[in-house]
Structures are given as C-alpha cells and as structure tokens.
Image 1 (cartoon, rainbow, N blue to C red):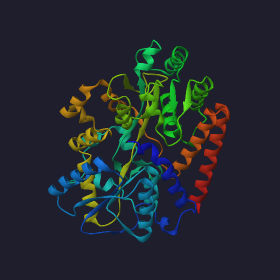
Image 2 (tube, one colour):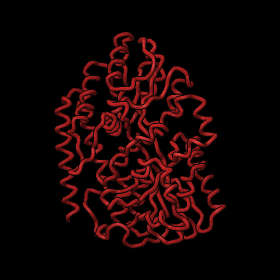
Image 3 (cartoon, helix red, strand yellow):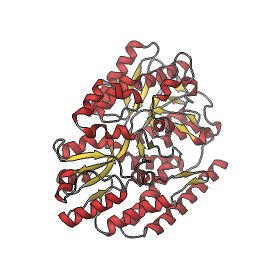
Image 4 (cartoon, one colour):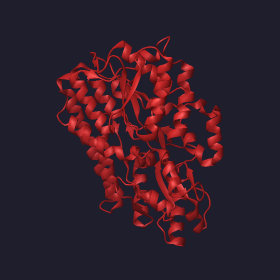
Length: 442
C-alpha cells in the first residue's frame, strides 16, 4: 500500500533518534538473552499499523484464530505507523514489558534481537507439534523467508513474513498507443527506446520517477547486479553504475521528471495520460485503477531487465517479530503467525488488501485464479515473486537508504554525473560501515 513508500522517512527518523547514542547496556546481552514481562498476561497483544478495512479484516482473522486455539487470545492493537511502533517497542524493551508480537521491518528486528527481545523462531519452526514441515517451508517463495533470516545474527530467523509486494512497472497503453507503440518493454534498451518515442511523437514525458531507494535497488537487481558482497555493501559495481547512468540519460534528455518526494503525483499524472510509465510497488495497483477509472488503457508489467532470461526485482514488505515473554504468550503469537500465513488465510488477506500471497500453492486457490482471470495484469506481481530479492536486513539500513536517495537526487537534478554520484555513495556507505563496526566493538 502507500505506506510501503511513505514509511521510510518516519522510520529513518525513529531509528536515528534511538541509535545515535550507540548501544545501551541492555544490548550487551545479545540475541535471545533474558525474558520480558507481557503487557497483559491474559491476552497476546499484537502491535500493528493496519487501518480501516485492512485493520477490520485482521481483527476478523484474529477472532477466527482465537475461536479455534487454546491459550491467550490474540488482540490486535492499532499502534500508529511504523515509526510509532518502533519507538514504543524500544521503550517497552527498556521497561522489560512487551506485547506478544509486533509488525517490524528488518532493521527494527535487528535492534530488538540485539537487546534480547526478539525471539529466535527456529524453536517454533522445529517444534514437532507447532512447527512447519520442510514441505510447508518449501511452499513459501524463497525470498520471503530469506528476508527474515539475519546474516549478522548467524542467519537465524527472528521474524516471519507478513505484508509483501514487489517492484513492478505500470504502463499507460493509451499514451504508448499515441506514440505508435504496443506492449510493455521487456529490456532496458527497449524501455529507453520507448521513452524516446513517447517524447518524440507525443511531446509528453515518458516517466515520472520517484527517487525511492528500493526502486534504485530493484533497477540494479534487474540489471544483474548485487548490492551485498563479502566485504560489505557495494554500489560501485558495473550494474549500479549502469542504473545511475540510465537515470542520467532519462533526465538529461528530458524523458523523465522527478516525482515530488513522499507524494503520489505520478499516479495522478498516469491517470491523466500525461506519462507512459511509473515504477511502484505492486500494492499500489488499486490506486492506479482509481486513477485510470477502471482497467482499460493500462497494464502492469515486470520491471525491464538487462537479461530477461535471468530476471530480478526487489521485494518489499513488513514482517512480524515475536518477543521473548512467557511461553504461553510466545506459543499464542507463533500459533497466530502460522495461521495467518497458512495458504487459505494468506490468499484471503491478499485478495482483500492488495498485498501478495506468498505461498506457491496459492496458484491452486479458486478465488485467486478467478481474480487473475478478471484481468491478465492481476497475476503479474505474483509471478515476479519467483525471482524477487530482499534488501539487506541490517540495523543501519535506513541510513543507507538516505545515502542512496541523496545520490539518486544528485543525478536526476544534474548536480553530479552518474560516475561522481556512485563514487560518493560508495565512499559514504563505506564510512557508515566503519562507524557501525566501531560501535559494535565498544
């Protein structure tokens, strides 16, 4: 949903406020150490950020779970946005009193795990009664589980999938037709050619580009690149340079213009047939349908690729962290997570919210197949899950995102060339890594 884009700034502020003083004495315990009191032993509180119809559906699912499971009932509590929940959780950790579980992004979960608050879910996955079999785990798309394994915490799983989306390309076929084009570009070469054709034949901008770091990472992935190497984060690879050079070309030739930060003006421009393309999460689909007043004149396509035989895109989305409280609370929380991610509930949630189902067996669901049959583009994002890739789940990731955004803006505004921006970005990312290692050694 829109929050996938809007949350980054607020979470960054929260992370920086809490992190700037280094690690507290509580953090020296390490992952899994200690136990915390539940806020209310009689219920398993779930701190979440869903609102309106999504929140209503989540409460319905919780009520159904409670009716069929023993132990403390799950109570969904709307606790603000991601930044609010992060700050509340950090404060609750210091008070050593926590809910049973909370929605979280990877960098948030790392903070909780380093303070001994986030539970290692391996104990539940392997449980002979409550766990998941190898067959059940294999039913999840690999990237969705990988996103919840933490490399700096010995690859252990400290969260479990919740809300998922992938980066896709929204194509205005009305605008493309006006330029004598049909069909979405499959490669970046074709994309640039189509952008030039749109400009030459219609006079319109081809792309309204939102300088979101995940979009940049998705472009790098789609060009065959990696952003994580053995020595750390790398933004000076040939693929990263190519991504920034493409942006340099698009803006230098006035084929694209920048979407105002933290806005959705690109959706309005798309609906008014002012642009041909937009790169946004798959969860934005309902807003593009509203903008175009239906399903005519547009489609959803995978991100263009350098090599379509080896596609890639970026995976978005939050997860659920379970906290080290009492065994009863933890079992209730894990039971709910397992229920929520079961094939039937996973599809039901997806169909009513716009998030993606992330179980492979979803293809067998009659309701989902009926949804796909309504409009071919309804299936596009799901098919991308097979090759989607998560971003790093490291504690300083929000700060890295800020550096990526700065580099991107410097290129599209003409302040730096692509080569200059990449050099500065890599220098700053390396500097941040050194500061993080220095704090870890204290």
